[in-house]
Image (cartoon, rainbow, N blue to C red):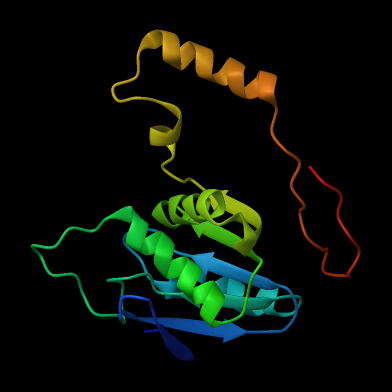
Length: 171
């Protein structure tokens, strides 16, 4: 089993979250999905630590943190608050944030609620349909939404720096 954290933070509600931090430079925070933990990112931490300060943390209830009580609710907002607390505690903002699955949704919600903490987002398969559609979506809504997105156009985002230090252009 891979080694865990280099530290921990205590969130605003007293929950302890483990994290691993490596490297120097602009901060890149990794947010794992629903059925994993900070070890999901182990293969990427050293690679990105050559150019960034990398932080991977185990979200609330993920190993090695305390497990969830089987009768407890698990609302999204506490995970968003936890990510904000991590960034503030580590003095890491504004941060580049990479999130996978549920972690991508957490990162996106943070960017919407507290944009000053986010420099850029990389979202890998975030379950964001609830932001676009009512459930169940009507056929008209399904057909109309892609056109609205295209007409409004995405905002350019910075893609960071290449390994050689050269700046990349907006996409």
